[in-house]
Amino acid sequence: MEVALGKKEADSVIKNGKLVNVITEEIYGADVAIFGNRIAAVGDVEHCIGDRTTIIDANGKYLVPGLIDGHVHPDNTQLSPNKFASAVLPRGTTSVIGGYCEIATVSGLKAIRVMLDEIKNTHLKIFLTIPSHIPYIPWADTVGAEISVKEIEEAMKWEETIGIQETMIQSVLSLDADVLNAIDLILRNRFAAHGHAPFAKGKELSAYLITGVRSDHESFSADEVLEKARQGVHVTIREGSVAHNLHDCIKAVTVKGINTRYISVITDDLDAEDIVELGHLDHVIRKIIKEGIEPINAIQMVTINTAEAFKIEDRVGAIAPGRFADILIVSKLDNFKVDKVVANSELVAENGRMLKTYKSVEYPEWLLKTFHLRTPVNPSDLCIKVEPEVKKVRVISMQVPKEIPLRFRREAVLEVKNGIVKPNVDEDVLLISVVERYGKNGNKATAFISGFGLKKGAIASSVAHDSHNIVALGTNPEDMATAVNYIAEKNGGMIAVVDRRVVHFIPLPIGGLMTDKNAEELTSELKKMNSIVHGLGCPIDRPFMFLMFIPLAGIPEYAITDRGLVDTVNQRFISPIIERL
Image (cartoon, rainbow, N blue to C red):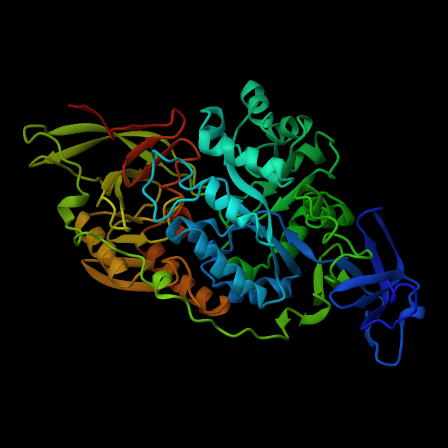
């Protein structure tokens, strides 16, 4: 207040900029005075300048609020918190809203706390949305740790916490007591509940929203966006590394003509390769503009709109007094290019490069040794067996389109030899297994999958929604078993195996999900891995990003968990074998 009144000098002033006012949708000349980590005044701030005030010259460029990713899982980038911060800050992202729910699935609330404490030592802000419950679909998965009302109540005491996320429509409509109690607890304490409602419409959508769910990031078409927006939902359109929903969903604006102010764009699941090669939300802004949205409205969709959807507009989302001093200096709006990044009042990045460095941290042993297979996996554990006299069977093979990791029904006839159902590599009907990694029950489940196209070998990963058990896919159970056992021995990673030989391995020792390598180093490893898998016949651009979604029992139409093949539409286990022929 004293700085704003001219009674005390500002720490720094950004001068000669054109302010992009996302509140009033105006662009005009204005200077910005900063004190501590907050904005003190905007406009004519000459009265705030003193002898010790640092002047940052914007040189006539645009001043844009720091960008906010309204729903992202930083642990899914496979980058440790400080490496994630170092990757996204130069792209203009100064705040993220997320839950570190993947690492929580492995090691619980205490693992989230470790991640948050590491982020605190960076210039990236994280606003925590706690998982509404873990496991998300209790009957479907075996997980390493659980989160329920007790844990949510504890996390509500943390300064980072703003609500819960991934409030599954299936759990709400089935009247899951844990989920409904979590929503009730959150709303009574003036936090917010954020949703997960793919393809929701009509009476089911109405019933779901009655609980008080505020936003949803699971929309796949303009009609879905339109209906949700009309029902009062803050729609957050996803544009990630594998789920490219923007092109279809933004037609709710460009074709159907609804207002953009209650629409945000988020990334959800993102890999390091995209951040390095394309950018983060700066890339998203460029894509929004290419879809026909005016630049200032595109910027709103990753700043003020997001802040309002998550009820944090008093802290971030605009360049205005009292907000955090997160300010971008941008040379072009139509081809959005971030020249400088001011975060928490400090100049942290310039021309796409970090000016600050963050030290690596030492993680507790319990977060580095999270694999406890009861016994090594044998190839016979990953086979589907029938009666010895059966010669052929008709099966369900989960068909995965190469554009998005949904799974649709495909039927195939497979040969049986000595009671074991054989995959058909020529017809792209491969084996897929999920192996429980936490030592709780030793579950192993196998089904069939199409779309990955491997001609030989196997791939596997310890990054696998929503349980992060080990998922393996291949042409034969021998290579799959080799892959699973190697991942467990190394405490996490992604692997390609041919003829029982490890061709390439990327270690992910932090909970089996993350590495402390920087984004460029990880990208180099991912490119090598993807090239190897493409050489095995896979047509999918990012095969491991797709693979991690196959065990996800919350999206249509099929999934496989450590407990079996799941009909996700009817929420029940089914056999992969339709009939014996």
